[in-house]
Image (cartoon, rainbow, N blue to C red):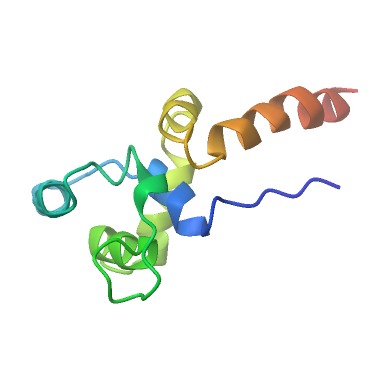
Length: 111
């Protein structure tokens, strides 16, 4: 059995894979970077608010970036290259989880 648990919330891992596709997404990300004073896609571990309405709440940030679209959120982990997910996910535990999958699960499947 393999279990992967994101640091605090799954939204942090999804944010690690968010890459803006359209100008509106680029503007939203830039606005959030300005308001937060950091890039939430590269430092999602810094999103630590308690209330969902707070600026630094991962659910709120992800919802704003993806317009609460589950399909758009899925693209964040399905389309982002693994090397980029590893790099961005160092602080959220995503990189460690991906490494564990590669080192422990892949050899079992390859047998």
